[in-house]
Structure formats: structure tokens, C-alpha cells
Length: 585
Image (cartoon, rainbow, N blue to C red; front, side, top):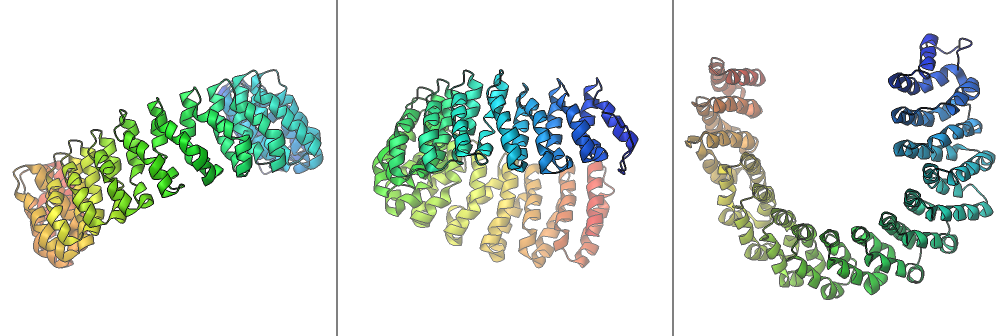
């Protein structure tokens, strides 16, 4: 490729020539840079020279560097607009065919994606003359790489060919499903669902189901587990009788498969499977499958299955779920695997709306058991879903049964559990009411301000503001503020810092008068503390609460206090005091 004549393009001719020379460079980075500017070269050439010179050069372009090839595929996707219209787009197929056969998987995947996009632009005559032969060449390629890439092209081709050619495509796809190379069979399984969407029901049953059955019986579990998603896609297209006739045996093989990975995959997609097959089929066949998976010998399978119990129960009549699934859940709450229990805990609270108030109360011991579990993640998952149970049983019953356990968790040795309790206190507060909250949880809420873990103390200060928003300014002033701010005189400086965090948090909700009478004087007092960390924290606090302080108060009290801190011996105090002074001014 050479610049034989200057083009009328406004692009710099010498720069384009440099890109062209770079395509032949021995340096990978230069070749990559030139390929990145392929569109610039095509723009300078114009459509005719792009077709006659650039594309033939790319057909012969051989590069052993995967980075260069990835960039080339990406550029070819854009080059479709520079070859002179859809009637010339087929000229790019040869380059993409070469790229779809290389060893690097990422290059092949991008090449197949671009081929699919180019196929949609092809006129019908070019589709039959160019695209179908390309699929056949790839599907019969000597190397597995080309055959693997071919599987991604059948779905886009199916809509554009005659019935006879469609039958030939299905037959060819069937050969790839039983290919000698597992990677090809895996690619065929990955793309089978896309092809299934293109067929009408009769074609699906007569032509594709035999191909699917072969994939579902593959000797490689990496192929069989992909057949599960294909099964769901096909089941959505069929009615109950057809699913019973054609897919029942396949599903049974899935949940009794010798490979735990296949059983794990069907557990992972179990709710989708139930929705695809319908309630009647789920009751007749799939519930027994779920029970079997919940009792599987592999903890990974039980973990995946446990996460689906609430979803499946939601699809079943209440009595049926109580009879078949709830007994398994009661066994799982004592499962030897902590991961199984944690998985169950993440969804079990969602059973309350499904079971109703009376049945939930009868089975409340399940929730309590998990709430007292030794593994912190189990307790965390239960705490995070308390509102689901509260909506069903009501706050009175919740407070009698679960609240004592929650209070105990506030002293849990795992700080993440304590943090979860803090995060859910505002929700409980809104549901319990002010009087009940003050009696049962008020002291607990304030006790978190003295926690040994910094993250807990910080969360507790944020929590105070949320509580003040729930119960109002008067409650905050009467109940919250005196106790929270009493920490300012604590001998441990960390507690005094917490006081400043509380001030920053609640200043927006207590009103200007209380900011003037309580918050500003206390912050000034702490700005004179003997610990530098507290002094600069006080300066930062003034910066945060500045918008809630009157202009007169800033001039008479805050600004002089910050000016004094500018003379501090600690450089951090001086820095934050200066920053705060500029902010409030």
C-alpha cells in the first residue's frame, strides 16, 4: 500500500503515509499505533482505494501479536462505513475470517461479533454467495479455533436463508455439537440458545431438540452445565405437554448428574427453570429435584439451592411449600457448612410474606436459630432483612421474639455485626415508635458512641442524625443531645473526638438557637483541648457546621477561636484552622 497520489482529504498526507509504513514495522507498538489509525488511512484513500488497496493488504496482513490483532478487529468494525456502502461490505469478510481462526480467544470472539454485525449489513445475494460459504469453511476448518468461531454465526445466518439451507445449517451445527474437540462442543453449547430463538416451534422440536439432547449428554461436564441454560430457553418455547415429552428426562439427568458442577449450575438457575416449566410441572417434578439438591452431598450445591428456596416457594401454593420445602429448610439451619447457612439466611426472611403471619409465628424459631448462629455472615444476613418479618408479624410480636436477640447482637464480638445493628436502628425506630424505642433501644444506640472500633463510632454518629430526623428536633434535644454531648469531658481523647463527630452530624437538625446555645460553645471548648487531634477536629467541625451558624456568631465567637488556632504549635491544627476560617468567612 502506497500513497501514489495525494488525496483531496484534509488529512495530513505525510501523517497517513507514516501510518501506512507503520503497518510494516517490526516494532509491535508502531504496528499497533498504525492499525489504530486504520480509519484515518481509509478516509484518506476514499472508498475505491480502500477496496482496491487497503483491504487486499489487510488480507495478507500477518501478525503474531495478539494486541495488534485485537485492535485490528475493532477497527474493522468501524471500517464498514468506509468501503462504499453495503454492496461492498462483503469484502471485509475475508479479513474477519482469518481473524476468526487465530489462536487467541479474545481476537476470535471480537471477530465473530464483528462478523455478525457485518452479516446484518449484507445484501441477500452477497449473503448467499459470501457468508454461507464462510460459515462452511470455518465449520470444516482443520483447526478447532475456526470450528469454534463458526458456532457463533449460525443464528444470524438462519433468518437470511431458504428452508433447505436452514436444514443444512442445523445439520452442520449438529456436527459441531459432537465435534472431537471439547472446546468446539462447548462453543456450540454456548451459542445453541441463540439459534433456538430463531426457529419456529416445529423446527425447534424436530430439528434442534435432537442436537440439544446430544449436547446435554456430553461426556464433558463443562459442556453439560451449559446445556442447563439452553434447556430453560427451549422450555420457554414449549407447552407443558411438550416439556414433559421432550425435556423431562433431560432435567432429571441434570439434578442427578455425577458432576457436582452440573448440579450446582441447575441449582443456580432453579427459579428460572421453574418459571420456564410452569407451576404444574414445578409441583409435579421440580420440587422433588430441589429437595434433592438441598440434601446434596456437596456444600457448594446446597449453598446454591438454599438461595432459591424463597423464590421457589413464591411459585407454589402455601400448603405445598410447607409440606415439601419447609422441612428441608429446618434441616439446613443446622447445616455443617457455614456458607450454606449464610446463603439460607440471605433469603429466609423473605418467606414471611409468603407464609403469612400465623405460619411465620409458628416457624419463628428458624429465624431465631440463625440470628444466634456462630458465623457472623449468617447473623448479618438475618439482621439485614428484619423488615420483611416485621411487615408480616407486626412490631409487638417482633419485639417479644426477635428484639432480645437483636439487643444481644449489639454486643457481638464481630464488629461487622454491630455495624449492621446500627444501620438498621433507624428502620426499627420508625417501626417501634418513640416511646418503645427509648425504653428498649435508646441506651443501646448511645452506647455505640463508646465502641472500641472507630467505624462503629462513626456509624453511630451518622445514626444519631437519622434518629433525630425520625423522631424530630424536640426528641433530639430532650433525649439525644444531653447524653451524646456528655462525652466531651471523657478522659479518653477518642471519646472527645466522637463528641465533635456528633456535633457535625446533628447540627443540621437541632435548629439555630441550639447551635448557638450548646453546639458552638462546646466546639470552642474542645478547640482548646490539650490533644492536637481534637483541636484540628474542632476546626474541621466549624467548617462543616458553618452554614448553620449565624453571621454574628461567626464574627464574635467562631472566627476569633479559629484565629487563635492559627498560632498553634501543631502544623495540622494550623492547616485546618486556616481552611475553616476561609470557609466560614
